[in-house]
Amino acid sequence: MGTPSNARRDLDRPRAGVPHREAHLSAATHPRPRTSAASMSWVILTLLALLLSAWSSGSEMAWITANPLQWETWRSHHPRRWRIARFFLQHPRRLLITLLLSNNLALVLFSSALSHLLPLGDLHPVQRFWAETLLGTLILLIGGEYLPKGLFQRWQLALLPAVVPFTGLVYLLCFPLVETAHGLTTALFRLLRVAEKPLHKPLSREGFATLLQHTESDFQDVLTRTLALSETPVREIMVPRQEVVVLPLNTPLQELHRIFVETELSRVLVYEGTPDQIVGYVYVRSLLRRPRSIQEVLEPVSFVPETMPATRLLEELVKKKRSLAVVVDARGGMAGLVTTEDLVEEVFGDIQDEYDEPQWLERTPEPGVYEFDARIEIDYLNEKYGLDLPTKEAVTLGGLALAHLGRIPPVGTAWEAYGFRWEVLAATPQRLLTLRLSQL
Image (tube, rainbow, N blue to C red; front, side):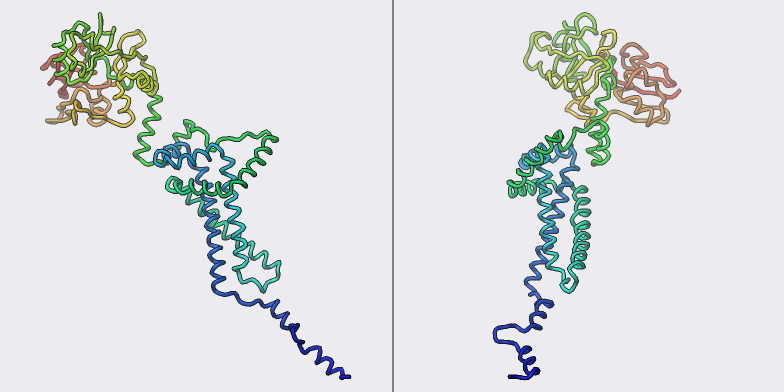
């Protein structure tokens, strides 16, 4: 029988096939170092999970903040991807569930990869839990939420071509989960009597005006003029009666042809009885059909009140496929004429055709002497030259002259009015062309 010391030595001696206790404890408390390949795999998985979380959060922001006008703009440039976008815009719950599933999957992967990547094996489990939680939350808050949402909101139109197919792909991959979650939430909302609302409400007038402040300058000008057009009555756009060329119904075709050549107009109104009784208009191209009388080429016109909004008139002309309308005053007489070209010019600016002058006459041959095209607006001349001409009687310089004289004066006619000596430099029997104003 061995001594106690020998027995102790026998207990401490490792047996064959049985690991030593100290070796076992050492292996438990000091794990073997990971290989570089394994560490790199966890790094890549962590970065991919963070990228997926960032893209999911940013996509949600792009979907929610894009307004209806931006979607319409995007639709015209990406008609194929619009079908995907339209599906999610019509089913906002499916959209949110899809993006939340993608984001939650990214969070799970990121947390798992981060726990394997961080060298926190020597810490107490509680300390390790809090260290991983705080560090992971900080990384996700900055890199997975704050930065991507700000960037996607800033460049949403540029990123939507990638966001829309990404959302569609996630929806297809997670289709069973998405539809299951959608069915459960729909049933729950029905119990709570909560209806599904569209992702975007139609733009209000105030919202549309606010949106203009965040668009490009050229586009902003067009949209601003479009918005203002709905508040503009046709009397502010029309060509005044004094400048409208009208002819009686029994005018010979040779006289009609001469008037078209002299005035360079494309359309002339026709009346029967008095100039207030307009029966239609003649288009210059219709003379190519060699009619025997004006009645054969007479086109119908629309009659609208002075107070009609310009946008409503434009819709009416397009619907009836007509190109002009006669504006009537409160007494039923003709107040002026409005064409579709006039309405479009209010939005897009001047539209020149083959009959338009490239630039109206506007010069000062000597101090205090001005020569102007009769079609120039008085407001423009007052602002640029400080003429202080009245604006209540007419819109254009020629209209003011006609309102003062009550007739179309021939070339060479001169008179004094509004602090100037007026002289007709060019005119036709139907309209004034050029006027000279000399300060008294």
